[in-house]
Amino acid sequence: MIRLLHTADWHLGATLQGWSREREHRAALAQFIAAAKANAVHGVIIAGDIFDSLNPSADAQRLLYDTLREVRRACPKATIIMIAGNHDPAGRLEAPRAIFDFARINSIGVISRTQEAFDVKAHLCPIFDDDGGLAAHVLALPYPRAGDLRLNAPSAEGSPVAQGVRALYQEAIAAARECIGAGPLIVTGHLHIIGAIESEGAERRILIGGEHATPSDIFPSDLAYVALGHLHRPQSVGRETIRYSGSLIPMSKTELAYDHGVSLVEINPDSGAHITHLPFERAIAHLKLPERGALPFSELEEALAQLCHPFQAGPIETAPFLHLALSTQGPATGLKAAVDAMVEKYAVRLVSLTVTRPDSELRQAPAPQRLSDIAPEELFRRAFIQTHGVAPTAAHVAFFDQLAQER
Image 1 (cartoon, helix red, strand yellow):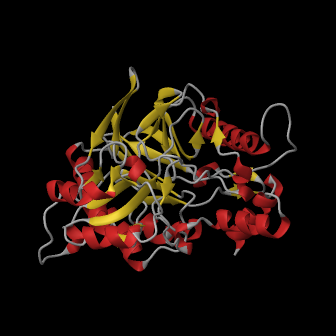
Image 2: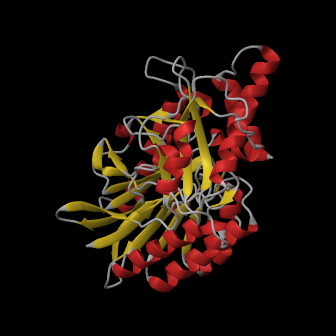
């Protein structure tokens, strides 16, 4: 039997309304390292979106390297595998390969081909048991970018993007089976699988051309386990052994109810895979006021007094995050300034404010949006619509995606 620890969607370097998440990340990663050591795992899979942006800060990169060092210390013989997600700079994960090889870390940023054929040796990683015997293989496939897919014209079988992803996985799995035979095979992916639950406003719909979901039947039933990244909610989709481990911490207010953590996977050749979700404790609390619905502004100060401690001198970086929903009958002019002034009296950090009116749908209070918070594909889409008056086609977006990867 072998044990794997499956994690994904770290989003190192992420901020929440300008506040650093490093304290939360370090606490979650310490629990991740402790889980790897306590369970004496034979393999660790990090299934993409390691960073939050294509240009991660030095602090974010340092946190990754510190974590990998500690995982190696905790599990000296484990196979460590990480793949690029749609947020990740694929080249930066590939560039340190010589150093990673020295530390026995498999970092896969791009789909490798040799003379147009899938290079299975660049993606196949062995897993060894307690006695050092070969027990399984991981076929490590990163997020498929435009240049990785062979796109055909639309047909009755579905979108060309979904067909391209299916063809890629068919080719890769067939090459792996030809190489290893019928032994246990684990496959990774950074995809949105049809039927999985996404977090509203937190996850980009990533496959090019807007075709963001792929059927779970791209994964054959003989696979021992499929380790997925991209969606932040821990969940299985299609069948129990096709799984998203979820993110380490909540990335938005829509994820506050999630049980963030990692997946421990035990694979027995006779009985198959057994999966246990290992939840993590949060280093920083996320408070939601009210728990349901919206609160009139006139009741805000009393609610804050009941929920929060008065602000005292000390590091605000340890204070809880506050997600606030207010209702108003009239214009919201000046409301944000009044809320900020009131919240400053308490040891909380306001990170989201939603304002509703009885005669309208839920509205987000106006707040400036930073370019770093907007995906390049979304900026391209907005510019295209502004220039041409129509949305870009799948071909336009595919061409933009290819150019973005070549820059």
